Image (cartoon, rainbow, N blue to C red; front, side):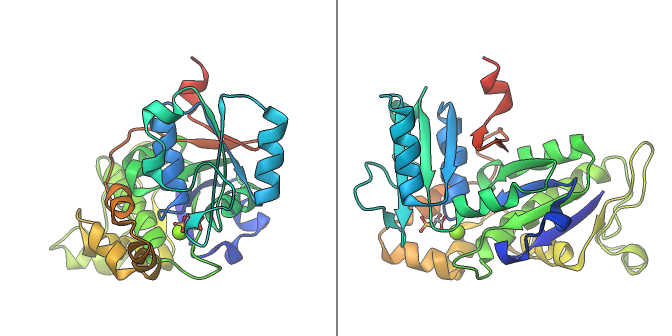
Amino acid sequence: MDIEILATPKDITEKKLKEKAAVIFDVLRATSTIVTALANGCRAVIPAKEIAEAKRIEGELKSKDVLLGGERGGERAPGFPHGNSPLEYPQAVVAGKVLVLTTTNGTRAIRLAAKGASVLLIGSLLNARAVAGRLWELQNDVVLVCAGTNGNFSLEDALAAGVVVKEILSLASGRNKIGCREGDPENLRRSGPATEAGPGNPPVILSDLATAVYRLALWYGDNLLPAFYDSRHGQRLLRLGLAGDLEHCSRLNLYDLVPVYRQGIITVPWLSLL
Ligand code: 3SL
Ligand code: MG
């Protein structure tokens, strides 16, 4: 299993995603909001690129069971009844509903990453372990896509990608030999933080960027809120009075679910079977 990281959506090409299992991260806040809404019983999220597109979809669906959410510049999109705060989507609001959502970076990055990948998962810190578990089951080559902010690298998205790499290596080390085991410098020199092939499993091979985000995740450990204080977008949301959102989005492995984007719609597959 090869693991590659795309640091911003500018790096997305069909060739890089072709036949890969991809995950998109916009930890602050789009993918955290999507994961939270689905965990709270939302039936589906439709990510729209533009405000006009979101309004059009809502109009076409025209039902009291459809919610319209949107953000621009960190604030609720003009005229929208809902914004992009995960805390706006508790069970009482979203259960059984469809959410049409448009955000500055996240929903656009989802739509972009959908081109080419064999499967596109929605990732965040909230569901990092569940995402890693799904990737491990798939045993496909992996591309972790960071949505970033206005085309720039975002620390929090790279961190979430690193946490997923860490979880995959931990799953792999159950059966495989992990190259970077602490106190084993000989092994580290030989293979870096990749794993060697184990019985029934191919090796896990990290790109240099995947190694970098893995090291980032090790550095922050399990308390991830400080990373949001370090990040420029985290600082901006704090200035907007959204400390509660940061606190929620930093909660590691709060939810055990893996949303999937397919043909314009994000659902949790086992939910859609109900
Ligand atoms: O850019 C996005 O997609 C948003 O998640 C940004 S914000 O956190 O809502 O400002
Ligand atoms: Mg973001």
